[in-house]
Structure formats: structure tokens, C-alpha cells
Image 1 (cartoon, rainbow, N blue to C red):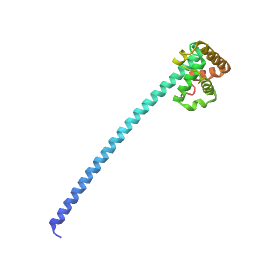
Image 2: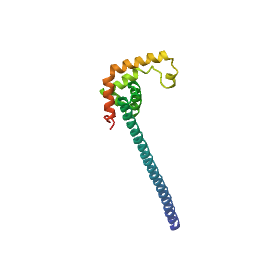
Image 3: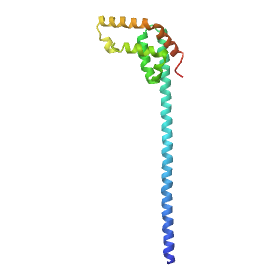
Image 4: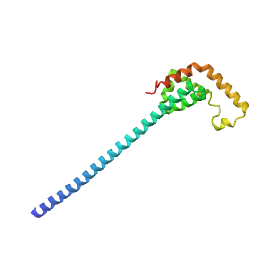
Length: 158
């Protein structure tokens, strides 16, 4: 074989190796950049999740405290609010024996209109619903207060 052909093939091989090495290097750089961006995005999501959990935890404490100390917050309203907050915070907490009353009160009052629908009710129907809520609250008062005390102290929220 002639030397020119050998040197030409060697040169072509070196060019191919150089091109392939450059392509591999570029792909490695892109992968590294993608992983860095993914890690940053995951860190941001984790930060947002932790902030949301802290907000929910504080809201749960405030509602529980209001059930115990604010006469404007009825036990029924508090249970309705706590059920929604706990479902968004950690749904499995509603299975805790102390907190099961929240679900029970919520479920037994789910047929009662709220907000604007409540305001639009006739006075007679409002009174019927209020009696129903008062009876429910009296029947579960100790359990509601126990759940509210535990939550206002931060139990279950750590």
C-alpha cells in the first residue's frame, strides 16, 4: 500500500476521532447543564412545598385556636375549615383517633349551604340548620375541643 493512502486514512481517522470526541464532549456538557437545571427546579419546588406546608400548619393552628377562644368561630365552622386544611396538609392525619371527629362533623354538615348560599337562605331554614349544628356540636363538644387543643399546640403538625 502506498504511504500517501496510509497517511490519508490515518488523517481521516484522526479527523473522525476528533469530531466524535467533540460531539461526545458537547453532549456531556448539555447533560450536565440539564442536570443542574433539574436540580435547581427541584430545589425550588421543595422550597415552595415547604412554604405551603408551613402556611397550612400555621392556618391549622389558628383555626384550632379560634375554635377554643373565639366566639365568632363555631365548632362546626372550625371542623369544616380544619377538614379542608388537613386534607391539603397531610390527609392521613384525619385517620388519627383524636382528629376523626373533624371528619365526622364535616360529613354530617356537608348538606348545609355556606357563604353566599347561606346568606340567601330563608330565616326559618337558617334557624333549622343552626339547631342541627348546635346539637351536633353539643354531642361532640369534648372531642372537638380535644382535637382543637391538640392542633393548636402543634401536635401532629411537625
